[in-house]
Length: 361
Image (tube, rainbow, N blue to C red; front, side, top):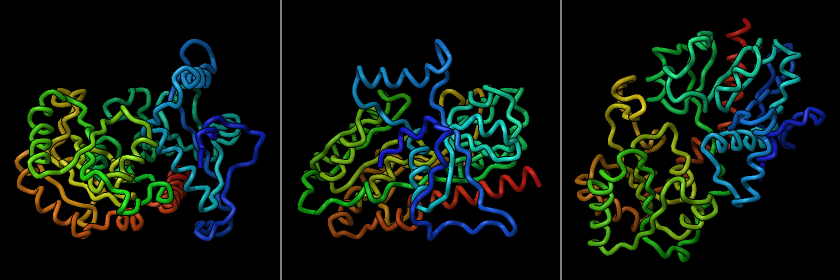
């Protein structure tokens, strides 16, 4: 289902809603179930009012289908989940929200939306707002009173000293799109997923090359993908070919690509080094969070295994591969139990109801 066009609001149309709604939360006693007001913008206007809508169209005409950012994927999957469970919502209907200051505004995208006009509404912010609370401008001190979403527990622990009203919400995965391929279609042993964002040359020598050598020495065939350099269809096809995945990333707040692999039935051997949050934009001069980060914040023994460094990969690889060969992992079961579109949408609605009650009650 392509829900990308819903980003551009058409206030003349009724709010969206799914046809079948057996999972819809019951309305609070004495009032109707609320319609969500969703706001998502990836771009601010650059040259003239409204050009944020035109620039992506021009880019698509010139370059073809564009990369779907993590922020956009969160928005699209939330909308798809809300459709499935029959929860109604509007998208980017600024006219409606201005006329109804008593209604909750759910701002999912970039924080510059907060500067477009003076919001009178109770707000639910995130998960794609600020990388860290120190980025929030001083004039938005009222954020401390708002409900703010982050994707996982370690991220929430990092933000709570600044924002007391933090809720954890992971978006759901499209489990009917990311499905296991038949075993006879598997032609590659390992998909090496490179999402190392900082000091890549260093980690190429310290981590990636030792992993390559170990895989080569064990006779495994390998395919490489690098974050930001593929289209979703290509990644989906690679997962269909591969029996397992090695996931390399310093840390993840959710890890949608990894979860897409799990939903596709592909067990994962993940680099999970732990330690402090080391984003060089913040660490160590602006933020020191020592609570322990993770590259797989949603993961258990059904999904695969983890390692902390090249030595851990080398010593653990044979054990991981033996479990892959024996079919011992059940990664899709984990996603179906925890991260479906429906579960994500229902969780979001529950948080939104509580946020409205807290900020208006």
